[in-house]
Image (tube, rainbow, N blue to C red):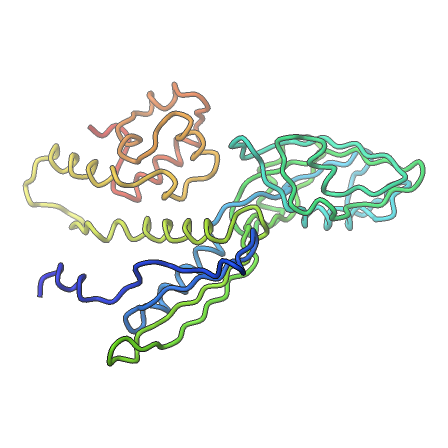
Length: 323
């Protein structure tokens, strides 16, 4: 049987449906059917894994409080100790605008009153806060907090030791950060009837986010990430190619394959993705045709970005300077 016939005869979902009445900025329930036997659980688990590990988000990564040298010190006129303030900051749900992937925010708050996450947004217009009423500290008369917060982009959970490389100010302390905007993913697989067969699969996926990304967008991103990882399997090549093909034709073929790979489908860091988009490099073939020197002359280029680009191209058996 030809591959075309196999693909046409295989049952697969043609679209994903959702419950419109139940859809919110933080919750979505998605249903896909029918799947061939075993495919629903395989695809469901893969999507769940991608959602929980590979969707980028933002979090407070470092903190510097004026007059405080360690997390065990108390601040005069502030009810919470420094350790509790840091814990409350970890729960701030934030997002940076204008394509930023890092931002230092200076905050000064005087009592009496409460210092909430809403004060972070008030201090800098490039910061969006999604739980503005979340209390960080309670100040009495005469109490004052002056601090610098660094907000960064990232993936998943990152312990404080790994965030130390992000510290930009002397005296700042790195903290644990939960960058992932995905709070919960629940999947359910059940058998359904199609014609005379009763072993087709129905996949139900429930996704809960922190509001910085919509559930439907998160699922779409996860699917693109999986597609990106499967791309190489469409063009399997021998490790040592002795076919005698000319290098030029092989390179041309590689570039052709990269034309359909858009930047948003590749797991670039937000910093590198913004660099590529800002320089109108929307697909991987356009990136691969650039040389090191070409990239170095572009706005926003640095050594870390160029190195990441090289590493991602290598995953596609490509390099810079292809023609």
